[in-house]
Length: 573
Image (cartoon, rainbow, N blue to C red; front, side):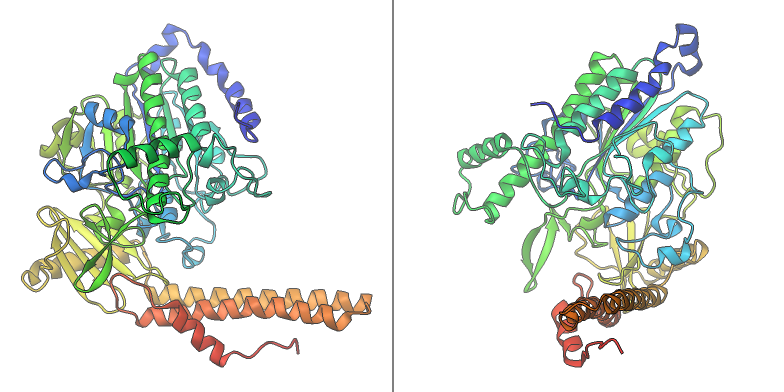
């Protein structure tokens, strides 16, 4: 059946508006001859070992033993696997801002999902920043730009940020958010068509249609931002049955295989979803080949943070998360939360190779600026560096960044707050509650098993100083500032809720219904639920401030127990 595109008319309209570019004659094409195309395929919550591509030649645990991604296998065969590639943050929003602007999350002042300090530091938002699309539009090379899929509500709409073609629906100021990966119509909570879960196949069709319209006619930048592999996990029935059959054929555990909530069924559904996302890679490669543009196109496949789907293993008597050989996953500054599967192909990039030079997603904007031959200067304040030398020289290449290293500054008020810096082969981490420091050689010990801080105090001290100076220079924020912003925000929410209550109560008094007291009680119950939630958030933040775990948040149940023991309902007086 055809996809019921509630967004399709909007997409078609934008494509029609841009068709004027397609008539360019050969003389006009010479103006941008040689300017390459760029495709950025951005997965959501995809872990380091969640594909069938082995990211490290010497470690078979860096590929998934069950999930199959033939498209990504094909991309790796014509391109290079970047074994040490980093997302800007361990959660999505900060990464999605950072990748667009070529700046670290500390400089962007958005470090984690629901960053309460960001609106204090950036009350006017990010309209003064330059996106990848806007940078390419200003290159003088006649780039046409498109973005399909999950956006970044903090940033706003992508069709107002340099992207000519998007699949954003009208009347949605935040563009496409997480909800668009859960429902077909977010406002009505309409489920997806059975043949298009998580928009996997409409994203594939829209992106291929864009390539077929513009490839070979003018240079383009296409970003396909998938909602997979974020929860809720879903796939077509055919993909699930195909993977279930293979699961059984491989002699894997079949206990409770047909129970929806069983671990076996969850693994099968996850594999089916990733497989269907990978079909987008296959389709894009096919389209580029048909248009004769594969060799003139840089294709980047990567993820916005470490895996949300993690293995649980017992280590030293405690259950820990792992993504392949990497410790932890999404929400953590251990490698499993920030090191992501990354495969890149394109002109001068070695086929079938592995590159171990550390790169970060805020390198992409300056890389595109360099490779496009832009006639405009690089935007101010960019932290990243061009990957041209690494693309052409592999492990012999270097990246010259404005930033002193790869900095991850995670001041989260509900997860372990950690700030880290990678310089060369070493990674330093500082716990922002306890002040404790860890140091790892992530080239030889990417599993982060041997803490070198005590053995190499000089290196630890110097790296920590570089990290601290950079964070201070860019006003990256402190945990104390974050907590204060959280308390202020919860108090603001509370006062707003009380004002709304009194306004409704005044209206109710004017109406004087027979069940006045009952309706008033209902309003008070609703208000107190909101006030209790606000106080819970504050108490969790207070407890997290004293929590020194590197892996887990302060127990939510302890905060709730305390708040309930001291809670007094607001009476409206």
